[in-house]
Length: 128
Image (cartoon, rainbow, N blue to C red; front, side, top):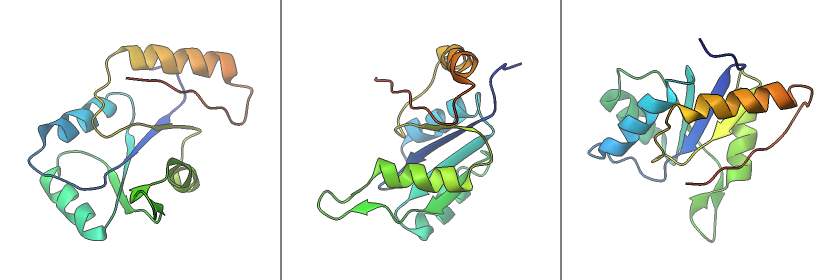
């Protein structure tokens, strides 16, 4: 099926809106490439709501401790450390919560896995 090593995809929500159809579509698209999806939220109550609304989706929801006091948003570096600590896969991928992936994601991850498999750590950056 997919040649690359297993992948954990993680994101952060600064507010869960159960009426937003984009988040569900995004998570469904991520699950085409990973059985490990982690969502970081501001409050534990949002995890309860997220799991209740999206009970058909397999995801792990955690309250983050990564708030930038000035901007009132979570910091990606702290989220990455948290995801790295709890992940059971060697590949981690951060994405914004509104990104829906196409089939090109598997090609990209395969290329990175095949060319950088000797490295313990590496970073790849994409854009919309």
